[in-house]
Image (cartoon, rainbow, N blue to C red; front, top):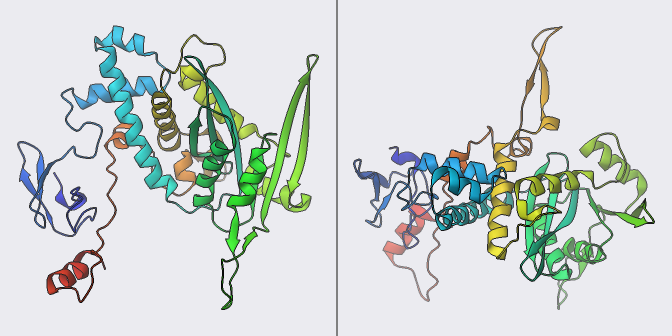
Length: 373
């Protein structure tokens, strides 16, 4: 037990979420509990992980979740391990909520020079209809940027996905490749705008679209057994688009091949996304949990063959350095195991002093100096 790597999870504690401040001590080694000297609360070492208050051995839980994350049916796990089907689904839901927090913390709060982004939607079957999953990928690092789920393939779904991309994008030249869905054009145009200075004038600031945003579409149409592909430049210049393609993917032209390859990975690992299947997604929450588990395993735990880097040992020999999408994007320095992923503790937001009228007390000033500076 290492108290220096643990933070206080109590939301009422001024020291919450801060590591290495000396406020955490070992309360009980036998019961695996820590204590916070600021708020006086104790908490379990598994607090903040998917193993918190689980009676099953974590090694077994990780083994079951690994099989699920790589496409093993729930019925096969029930037959092999003897667990109840509801127990397995409960672990899957826990893992999905945990991976969503990890993704929002590590990927969602990062600022990246995206270069080229590709987006697409997947249709999944549910009881009584269908559900849509929209996702985006950073081409240069193959990083899964996130996804949104909705019962309708409409503007709200696309705007939610574009909002995720906008939150991560630095103000750099950006190429966006999408399919022929008209909602993408307006959503990217509205999201990628910056405020103009008012220079003392009253009223609301005007919004100016990004001049470095380039938007292309790949429209596929099938007629009489013949597939035709039309590539459109909706916004931007052809020379800059070719430069961004060369920098992000190397040789090639306008395409959506990378997001389609990612879609194939999700279809392989989530059986409800397969094109021809009898498996149905009974609830959207189950599909969302699977999306985040598979996405985080893909980002942090899976080596990508096209991301490997060669380094020379001598004039005639070389070695390959394998990388995950998260390593290529600079979000981590090593490949995570699934135990690391499911044990990663997302710190709560830092404490901020309460807003009150008048001069703050000496105790409040002391807390601000210790935990809010």
